[in-house]
Structures are given as C-alpha cells and as structure tokens.
Image (cartoon, rainbow, N blue to C red; front, side, top):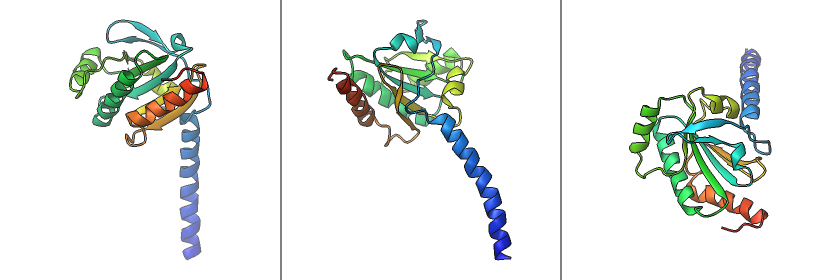
Length: 178
C-alpha cells in the first residue's frame, strides 16, 4: 500500500516538476540575448530595446500591483543613482493596461517616477520575457544586449542596492566606472 502511494505521488510530482523546469527554462534567460521590443512611453516617445545597445539596461516588467509599485520605486532609486552614466532604466507595464490606469498607478507611487515607463497594450514583453504570472520582473542587460542578471518578485533579492551592484559590475567590465 505504501509503495502504491509513493508510485502515485511520484507519477503526479514528476510532470509538475518537469513542467516547472520547462517553464523556468523559458523564463530565466540569463546569458541569452534579450528579445527586442519597441513600445511607446507614457510621454508618447517611442523606445526600443535595440536603441539602448551600448548601454547597461535595467528593465522592469510590471503590472498594476503592490509588489510592482515597490519594485518600480526601487527602479527610480536605481535611475537616480545611475544618472550621467552609460545606463538606461526602463519600466514597462507588460499587462496591457490602459494609459489612464497606468498613469493613475504611477501617481500613487511614494516617489515620482522619472525613468521612461512604457505601455505594452499587446502584452508583447510578457510573452517575450515569460512574465505574466511572475511579476515584478527585473533584468539587467549588458552593453551587447545580453541578459546578465534577472530576478522575480522578492524585493530583498532585487532591491535598488543589489541592482546597482550588478550595473556597476557591467560598467567596470567595460571600463565605465560609476
């Protein structure tokens, strides 16, 4: 009887673990080329990831939620501490929310967001970067467009100081000190 229960448990657990591994393999893309996208900012400016080549890019993918507000606030701190450096900080509402809703969400932040915040009505970035269920999602992309660091959710593991340290590593490797 115990053996039968173990076999059934293993039969149920293995597909779940395999599907999680497949999902994670498609989601965590450190070392891979960052997929390009072109979106409009709240300001109306058009921004593409490809246009940032040569810079270290900090990319935050957000929905309208409290954890995203906390991480978006962290990105503002990163933006402020990297001003004047070869760094671009970009936020994206990857959930397809309306411009008005995103603007209202940003106005509720404890700090004023001054980095480019893009709208993704087609949820392109959610599809490209495996988001959706895993938000907020922050990537640090090197000067050649390769993802070098990525974190989901936990603000302790992806706080402003942690992100800035990752940016500093990439700038130092290319000879651009902060």
